[in-house]
Image (cartoon, rainbow, N blue to C red; front, side):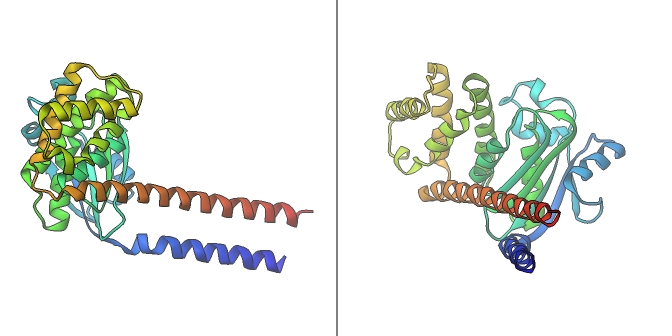
Length: 280
């Protein structure tokens, strides 16, 4: 029994050692609230953030702010007339982008993560939430505003606009072909070193070949939409290897978190067995 207890204690110690770099790696934080929330609605949103209002810097995003990026790119029903989505952003020194959502029913976590790498955000904890289900398109504006406030930096405007377009193109593609839409766009993004020197026809061919890898058939209109996005990627003032590195870092982070979850599951199983054994 004593040996089992010591083994359990060692497991917990190892778990804390694994998690402590993540916890110690956080820096400044900021919340961007949708301007049209009531106090009661904001209380709900802050509950999703897991913090009390007033503990971190707060900024406000209006529907006009959201429309500055979205109007003409997204249908009006997805923009809406109210700014309701809110975001919590915490800078990190490393570890990639950790993102969770609550009551966001169109933009997925994978879409946010991909777009934020395009905008130039490499390490951050992001929570996007609303008191009631919303599309989540306007939240990108809040993420930009909160990230810039938390870090004291200014993101490149062209990169921010391209990231918004990426969410729109990916979202519409996802409506048509499913979850592989994000994988198709991410795969093309990782080819930026090659696409910068390609003609439009060559890029169209690459788009079709990439879609085929995911057992997806694209319409001519979808290919043209993606072509426009790839050309925007090509115009960004960004090292061609950066997209690849960001995608690899994201994949490693996802893999690490899966390992952590598995590790804690094993600890739970161990103590369940220990408890069962003590009752015999």
